[in-house]
Image 1 (cartoon, one colour):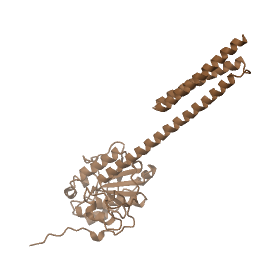
Image 2: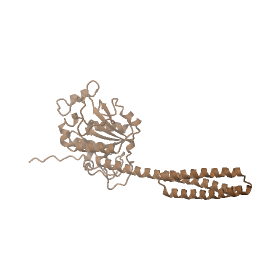
Image 3: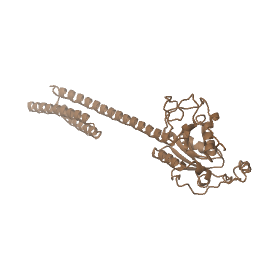
Length: 363
């Protein structure tokens, strides 16, 4: 009886304590000093570390993050049986990732399509010779306007074509776009994991961008090729994440930003209230000084009349301040302004009485 072949785990390919590892609560490794377990980045539900408290990686910032979707086109999915056979969940996972990134308003979503011909793809002659007779690997790829039903760009999303395996070479201007947009992190996904996704991740990494490969939103011509590629460079050159971990991290970051924004808004409102209160106090002091001086026997009638007019202007100004405060929903401050206005009115009554008495005496 023939013994079935044992499934490879690629342990010999894994890095023990990768020098470029980046561990936080969303990464796949449970420790930066233990080899990666292949199951930790092939199981869709196990992308969070439960034992590591090391937060070397900054949180994702949607405003500085780009999603790079590589070669999701009929030649590599609907027309490629080996990929569809081993990755039946790929359409759902990729569409979920795209939906999450759109809902969190990441800075840029970029679609890359392969366009290979002998005229502008110098490597194609070698490739065609190596794969002569293969029905699964088409050497010439001329993409049509068709998109897969589960992955279609919107009008405001960028589409670029590439003539080589990397999305950063062959005049794609991808790196220029990332620089112009202020991007610092790129989420890479798509087809084929060990070829164009891998090469695109290399190019982005070499250009200095933080590179995260979303493993369950990638697929290859066979599960083993996919796993071998991730075992070679996962958490060595790029970070490994799942669709779910990206969703959770983006949502948590958005919530934190909203809390910070609320605190800033509240602080700004408090500062405005304090400034208005200071103006009120200054105006009240001016009213008090005018009231005292109006009682002086050396004040003439013209001065007293001017003071009355000035007090009326001050009272009007105070009422305007009160209305402004109420528009900011500051009931406490509004009450203090009412008190201030009442105080002004009291002073105004005293002034009017003094003016009347002085006028009567003069007559």
